[in-house]
Length: 446
Image (cartoon, rainbow, N blue to C red; front, side):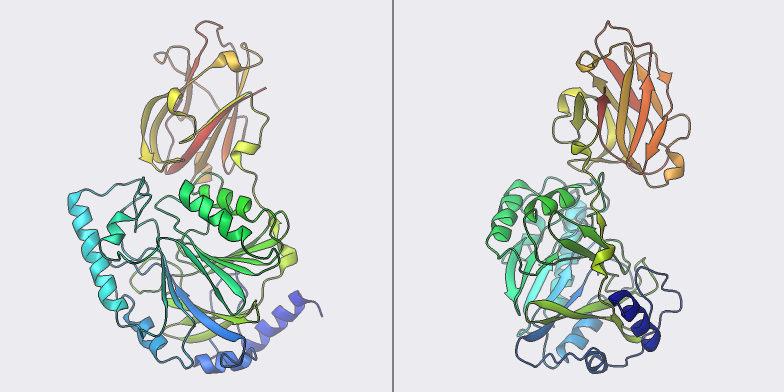
């Protein structure tokens, strides 16, 4: 019996569902953590074994939410205690209420009070249990390299760190407000990974589980795929952000990364039907020996081991595809070509786009009469991507001609644009999308 068949048989025996299948009718067969440990033959008290608890998206500032108190009460009763407890981002709401938003003075005051409420509750945690905190998109704002607002309440807490637990290397990262990994943190990450044996198991705790993204939050897959380029040991990425339990497997250069997104840890917050809850990761001799989910109103269930042969190739980065003769990417080299921007600035992508106008140097194209153009864009509702009234070109930014994509993908739209005059030697592109959209750049193709 192979692992896939074993997992299905175990699921049938225990009455559990395999992620990422529908959670409708999900059952929680164990009434205590001890029962769940026993079911996977895990003894957290044995030498070389321990476990940690992780939750996310507690969003202090949400009305009528119980916050962390119910989870902390349960953690404090665990015997033996976990080796650490992690809140994996989105501690609060108002450091950045939406993507690209910088808080005004009033919002900074509100965010500070939310952090103080969070700190008051987290102080109830057994002081013998180490606390690890990562920052999410609602905890920081664009351009904030050092988390100054967070440090006003938690001055002692590092924005990123690493440590070992039972032979596993644990890395906590700051995904900032947009999934953009700042240069200083990026250099630290590369040095940290290089300091570890290439075969060592590594767990990455970061708020945004964005390995599948090429537009939004693309800084995370760029950073991790580069940092782990030579790594051969198993990698786990645990993230929140989407308020749901699911997982995907991605094939990196020399290993497989399991991306595990977890549901929110507090009630009265949007998300899947398993919230509120938290995860218990069981560690033994440098490996993840098992995973247990605690649904706080119903019980515990076991998460089967992932089938690593099911891993898919990581999506190709937009800067590495399409043999472009010219390309500009938001936040990297697009400043000289910006004409008009009505969108939220997320550092290396635009979010909530209302209108974008760029001036493109047609002279850099091999053919000035006919141009192939690609926009790197992701629509929340992909059905909107080919609707009329969104894409326009002009020679003078005054008279606009609508154009339509001849091909589109989840993160790009392609156009053939003919009858381009050689003078003036520029083409203006206007994008006025329908519905919520993220935009990362544009390019000319031969």
